[in-house]
Amino acid sequence: MRIGTSLIAIAAFAAGPVFAQALGTVTTVNGVATFTTSTGNAALVAGTPILHGSRVVTTSASSATLRMNNGCTVNVPPGHGVTVLSTQTCAQLQAAVQPVLPVAGNPPSTAVMGQSRSGMLAGMDPVVGLWIAGIVLAVIEDWRNDDSPPPPLSAQ
Image 1 (tube, one colour):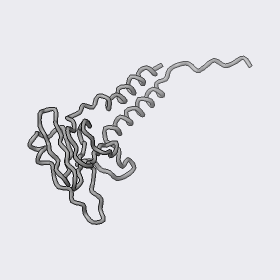
Image 2 (cartoon, one colour):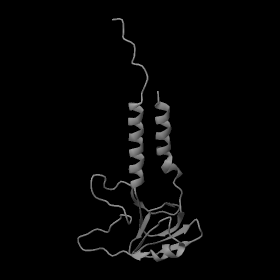
Image 3 (tube, rainbow, N blue to C red):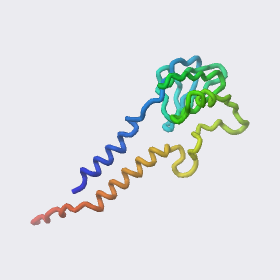
């Protein structure tokens, strides 16, 4: 029986988010700012870990300071936003802080560049989609290769 193989594969896929490493933390927040990740939106507070793809947006009366693990400090002034990517240098990250200008009739986009937010899997992080696909494939493979004998027939 190959249940053990499937359980190991499932555990490996499920453990991925636990081991996602923070790129830095929020050190200060003045006023109300929002924090967007692939799993949703929340109010930004000091101590919030910054992960790859995190987006910080401040209102016209708020600001935030991010301290990255590499020593880079990023100030997000009022009415600005920044999306943090693990591939950015300090200079690139600081340059990525841009004004947030609402467009009439269209809410601001929270999609990370290169990620589509439409279709059947709208809003799903591509990595989460791969984990789900891996789990499904592991279960199907386990089911196909189940070589245990059928249960014995009862004497009734």
